[in-house]
Image (tube, rainbow, N blue to C red; front, side, top):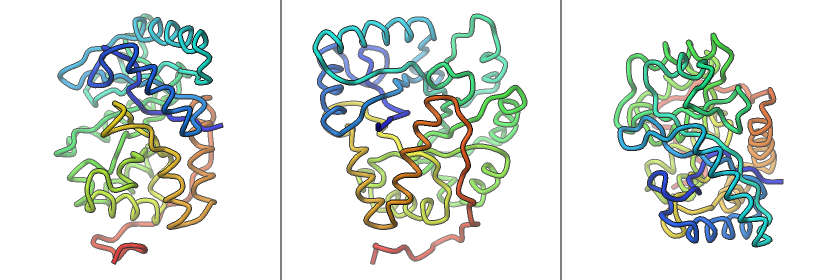
Length: 259
């Protein structure tokens, strides 16, 4: 069982596929890569897309029916990638909330930070989420420029209960050497809890989860691959799990496998 907790497989809702047929082709690609379950996570509050919970849930149901009709062995679960904003904790608690936790578990919330900076209110908002019972999973932490410069911020966030997701494409070098090196440093110092595809299409940003697991196993060990795979299942099921204890990262570390 391989679970992908972050992707944009639903069509017509954000910067993912535009048509149902494109979504179907992405589903087939996911199956070919060994993935059995995906949590569809359309964007929310990123300045471009204001997806709402009920339409997403409905589209996921319809998409699963289509996959079953076509005998494609992939299960799609509802979720959302929520760009960090001030009232996210309050909005999640509303009876008729427009926001979604991952697989509607009312536990894990996929939170996106800006790429260019680290908002001063980040820790306060994540603290508010945890006060009301949610566990923030920070999406593609390696893409945030300020976190790359100040990795001690990640250590602080982990100590305060946040979890970190990195993209499979970053592990494979699809976003450049700088980000690739940083991802490997994050893994080395136990600052990664789950790997996801963040797939958007069939070409430049696709389902490379299996390839990234192979790369991790090659650079580190099967222990890490098994850990990341298991954590994705725990998150999808809303279950607690134990994390590897992180070490404080020093800047500009020399990385194994990169010379």
